[in-house]
Amino acid sequence: MTMEQSITTNLSFKEMAVSFLQLASSGKAREAFQRYVGPDFCHHNPYFSGDADSLMLAMEENAALNPNKIFEVKLVIHEKDTVAVHSHVRQHPEDLGGAVVHIFRFKDNQIVELWDIGQPLPEESPNENGMF
Image 1 (cartoon, rainbow, N blue to C red):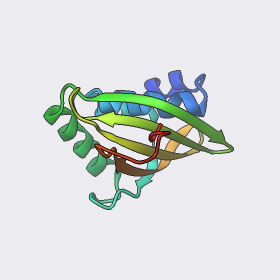
Image 2 (tube, helix red, strand yellow):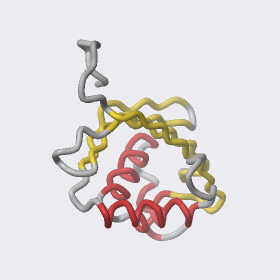
Image 3 (cartoon, helix red, strand yellow):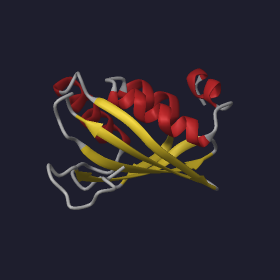
Image 4 (cartoon, rainbow, N blue to C red):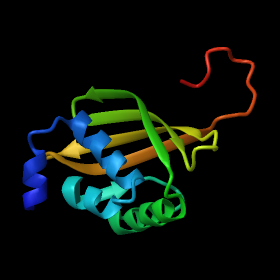
C-alpha cells in the first residue's frame, strides 16, 4: 500500500468511489488510479483492454479532449463491497450529456473491479420525470 492509499483508508467506500470519479473526470486519472486502485484491478468497459493502464490512459485522453467536462453525482448506493454511482456527465457545458452508472467492487480498501454503463440524454422525451 502506497502512502497515498494509506491516507484513503479513513474514507468510506462511497467516498472513495466518488473521489476516484471526480479526480478522473477532472484530468487527474493517474492520481485517481494511484490513490484508489488495487494491483489486481480489472474493468468491463468494452471499448478498451481490461487492465488498469488502458482505462487510465483513455480517461486521461478524454479529460484532455474535454477540459470543461462536468461530472455531477446524483446518487450513491453502497452494499457490502460494492458501490454504485449514478451521475450526469457532460463533456462541455452546452452538452446534454448522459446518465452514467459506475459500479465498483472493493477489496482491502481498494478498487479491484469497475463496470460503467451510460445512456445519452435525449433532446426530447415523453417522460415527465427526466432521467434524474
